[in-house]
Amino acid sequence: MRVVRISCVGTRHLSPPSSSSVRGCDAHSDDASASASSADDASCSSTPSWRIKKSLTCVCFNRKRAYERICSNLTPLQEERLKRLRKRMKNYFDASQPDHQDALRALWSATYPGEKLEALVSDQWKSMGWQGKDPSTDFRGAGFISLENLLFFAKTFSTSYQRLLKKQGGKRAAWEYPFAVAGVNITFMIMQMLDLEALKPRSFLRLVFLQMLSENEWAFDLLYCVAFAVMDKQWLDKNATYMEFNDVLRCTRGQLERELMMDDVFRIEDMPSFSLLS
Image 1 (cartoon, rainbow, N blue to C red):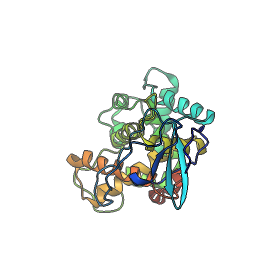
Image 2 (image 1 turned 30 degrees about the vertical axis):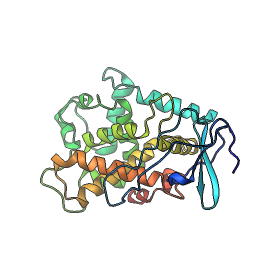
Image 3 (image 1 turned 120 degrees about the vertical axis):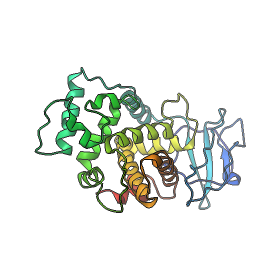
């Protein structure tokens, strides 16, 4: 197949390739330095992190007897949506801002409909899984977007949200993970996994996600909801306790990475674990 430099109009998705099926789509190079060891679905190890060669504009994959390509150059729509998402990620929680206060109140109302919140600093927050009576101190790791993620989950998939909040279903540990704090950790994990802060893409997973983001501006929030449901399932499957939370989160990340790179997963809604949500 002839290798040429192309603009970013490639396919929306690719599946994990073997090293023999990868080509550089750059006029200056016919080879791509991409290799990966096979991932064991039963393990918690992450999907191989293929690095993108700096001189390459695109990488081609031979899948189902046809070449597909994904490009490091972004479309205008992808650039705009990535810019908005980065802005959300850099927005630190500020308890003095009225809109941030309103978001906290909205989270309480969505979590406990009909139950009055006495104050923004209150022992009532501990029932949601915050570490203390002031939830603003727990947002430092992931910022305001982690609050937005929780609120999106509560409003979009209320049944799943309430089930996980109340730890319903399965055999639960005597020392369970704190729901809200777990949510903040999940936001931070996804931010790291997708490597969205980097100026240039360094992994194919990020490029795959940006293709999904061009399909749906709420792809990050939807992925968050899937991640929370996967984390809880992993927790139950492993009969985990609080001290094993980091291991469960690592396994969750590995599963998300594998699913995002599957055949026929073009949107977050196509991920197998999306069926866990209701």
